[in-house]
Structure formats: structure tokens, C-alpha cells
Length: 268
Image (tube, rainbow, N blue to C red; front, side, top):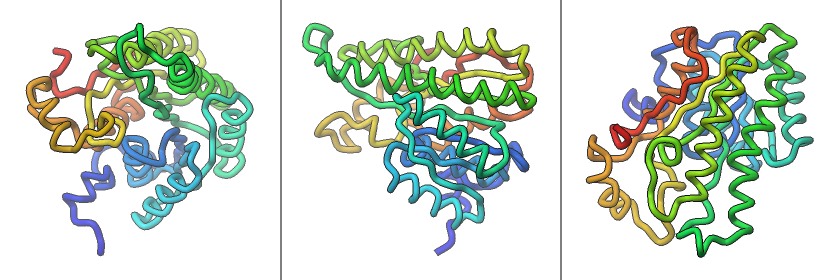
């Protein structure tokens, strides 16, 4: 059954807002959640999208959804913690589609929960590898292509947790996302003269699997955030992606090195 306008917008596929016709966009972590909505939204607005994820099956599902929406996409399996894998992702995007103009470096994990004295060191290192090194490697190879081909736009996934607010038991996650925010700002200054605009989005809690704590139901999650977020609810993924689209578009052409908090007022 075709999507209604309401459900299409919930997936970020309703066609309004900026156009990305003629652009090639890479989205990491695009197999689920915000990444999937981002990939569908870019495709709905005319971009050719490279759906990159460590899970080949979920990436293929996102491509199928995009094609059902009438968009153009292809899947790439990538491990963002591995330099060769990330380089191959960029090379594949360029070889298949003729260039790379936009990147949404969205891949991330939530691990190493609990007070610092109890944090599992293996989970700590895994979270650093995905959330920080993964963003650094993605930018490294995206920038190398973009600066040789007239520039581009990069939007990284930070978080309101870390650079903006803190929650007990989430020190490891907060550290990684604060690092992404800082890395984004410095990279933006390093490469604006190369014609590359780099910014970040800091989402608050959104309706994704990652925002569910172990054993928590959606009702439990809603109750947990009802008093924390001034809007009284968590975000739908298209509400986060709206900020991504704006930063990736010409509408934000004078925005450089910014971390756009999109959290319903939680960090106000």
C-alpha cells in the first residue's frame, strides 16, 4: 500500500524542503533509525544515496525502501572503525555514482553504560572506535575526495548528551559525542578554505532502538523522558533529519563548524 502523506513524512520521504538533485550522498549507519530516515530523505529530495552500514542486510532493506519511494540508492557494507573499509566506501560511492557531494556520518553505538568505576573497558574501547574514530576516518576519506573535486558538505552525528547535557551512567557515550562535536569544529576550520562545510547535529532522545535501555519498553521510555524534555516527548526520526537536511543544503551556506542541538528543549 502506498504511504500516506503522514506516514511518508514520518519516514522523511515527503517531498518538501531542500532539493539535492544531481548530488551523491553517503549516509553511514543507514540501515536503521536516524540513518535510514536520513538516507530516505536525501533520496526523496533527488540525491543518489549510498547506504552504508556494517549490517549488509539492513542496508539492503533501506535501499529497497528508497527504491519503492522512487529514489536511487545502492548499498555498501562498511566497518567505520577500519580505515581500509572506510576508504573503500568512498571509492565505491565515487566509482558507482560519479562523485561525492554530501556525507552524513551517522554511525554510532551506545555501550559502556554505568558509573565509571564499573565500566567495561572492552565496551569503552568499542564505543570510542565507532563513535569517534569512525567519524574521524569517514571525514578523512570524504575530505580527500571533496577537496580534489570542488568541495562538499559533511554533517556529523554528535549528541545533546556530552557537549550540552549530562546523564548519570552515560559518561563513556558523553565523552565520545563531546569529542565528535570538538572534532567537527576543528575540521570545519581546517577545510572551509577547501570548499568543504562541516557541521554536526546533536539529537536528543529519538524513537529508535538505541534510545531503549536494556529491558525497557517504549512506554517505559516515554515515561522516562516525559519530564526531561520540555516538549514532553521524544523525537520522531524525521524531526532529527530535518536538521541534517538543512545543514546539508544551500540554505545553511553561511553555517560552518556549528553543532545544531535538536532535542526538544532538553538542553535549553
